[in-house]
Length: 151
Image (cartoon, rainbow, N blue to C red; front, side):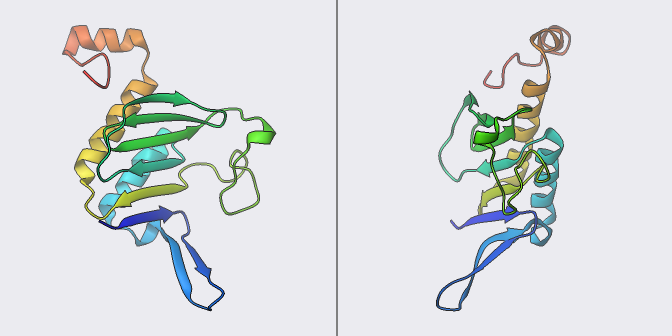
């Protein structure tokens, strides 16, 4: 299984030997299904999305820079509203992520990705991250929707 990394514009590095090495492909070069996954994550406000090949991970984490959401093979990282300047991250440009480099920056997938399953997981993460406890309780009573992403 090959790992494929997509970024906004792609990143090609020329080594000391003069050979060009692709570090990431431009998202415009990705198949339409991968671009749709990118768009869904972008509309959630994610900056980095990682779809693993094997390992499952569950839960939410809060770090100094990102809030992360993990379910099954998908991990989504969304930058906090306010980040201390000492903790600012940079993607390619020497401008902090909070200034110009907003939105999706990196999508890491494997060649055997199940895009439909990943899209459903992104949708579930969005639902549980963006709805309050009371909204989920109401939806549970009215529609039978699970209260948490793991149930």
